[in-house]
Amino acid sequence: MSIDEDTRISTIVYTAIAIVAAVAFTIMFT
Image (cartoon, rainbow, N blue to C red):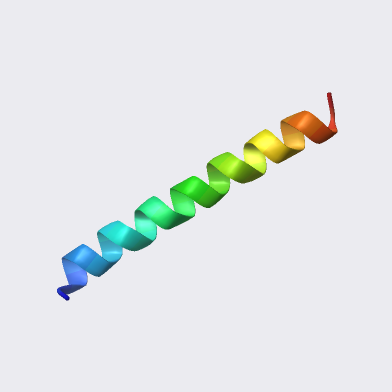
């Protein structure tokens, strides 16, 4: 697997985690 592909996958994973965290905080504080 190339470095570019690995970086892209990591970016997608971290973005997904950030979205899930934001939704969780929204639910908790609403």
